[in-house]
Amino acid sequence: MKRSVKMNEKEEITNQKPLKPLLPTLVDATLAIEKLRVAAEVGQTHLALRGKHDPERDELHRRLRDLEDFVDGRVASLIQGHPAYPWFSRVKGIGRENIGKVVGLVDITQAEHISSLWKFAGFAPDKSGKAMKRVKGGGKLEYNSQLRSMCWRLGSAILKAGLRQQCANCMHFIGQEKIKKNDGKCNCGSSDFKTVATTKYSTYYLKEKEKYYQRYENQGVKIVPATSLPKDKDGKRYEPEGMISEGHVHNQAMRKMIKLFLGHLWIVWREAEGLPVTKPYVVDRLGHNSYIDPGELTDR
Image (cartoon, rainbow, N blue to C red; front, side):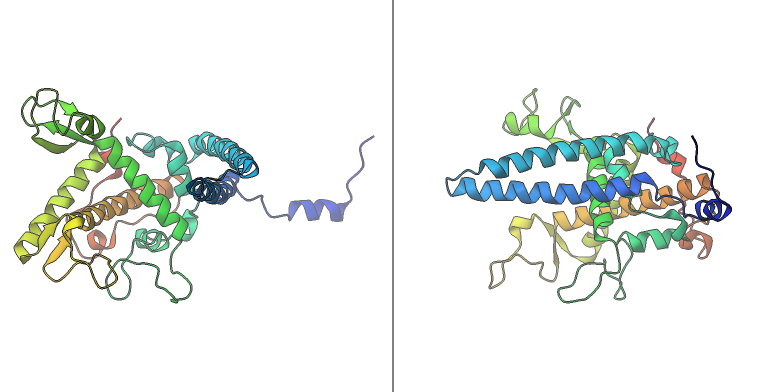
């Protein structure tokens, strides 16, 4: 027999706040589980180096891995219902789990401008005009460190899907691992390769990277492998005046690509939610003719 609901109970039910969306909850959970799983793996490695083995730690790692796989699977499933899914699912390299761990950490209603999302994700310049970073003893961070890490992970996946090594002799594409197995050579015997882009965002990355190379060349700055950098008294490599590492330039170009993706995500997501949308400040206010529509960089 059903219990009748009194008026004050109805009012209480009606006034209850809506449940927190499940995707952010699952993303918070999977990131916490991942941290524990990695810690368990580090512990296993340390024991192995000492010639020891802990069955309990192995069982913990197995269970954490299974739980992480389960939650990741739920994230990948739920992301298909995201308002921006019809757009970002057409960008090659955007895996469901990776993009889920980005959008699951963002409340798009709180990001009124593209720059708001950039700042929250740690991709806006700090007060000195340099990239935001963690400062030892610097207090509370101005950005979400987990979101920034997930954005870098997503950017790496985009480049992995979109950059290929092409033989300058036979013009065939060959994977980096196969080049290593072939002692740095193509099947045709040539060892002359060039990096080419096969996707839209990776094409943008290469263009920005070339701009940085040209800028540093004009400034007389030498770009070298990280192993060619000098070491300080503590044995750490550093970039002296007039020198910058190849990895540093790569990160600068990748940062530009990630910021472009986040800007596009902001536009598409806000439009899908019926929220106000503006063009980037440099286009809307400063009149720069550099706007790239999100639809221009899809691959499918």
